Image 1 (cartoon, helix red, strand yellow):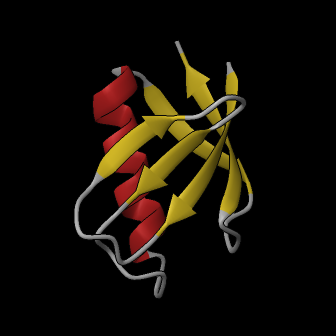
Image 2 (cartoon, helix red, strand yellow):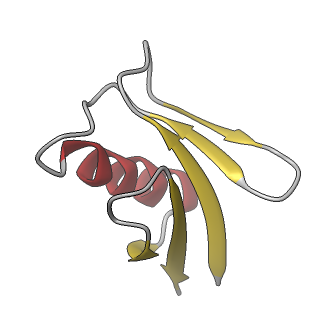
Length: 69
């Protein structure tokens, strides 16, 4: 399953918000040295209880995420 997310780094708290066509993922980590991407993967793995992989948008706010069974 592939989902679209929009990431906001340097947020006050870690959270996942379901929007119409995508998920908004707020993370505390800064968007440098891949810290925000690592936090996004950890947060989504806990939320969906599945293995998560970023397939597009490593350096972008908008990302495509693969959820593996």
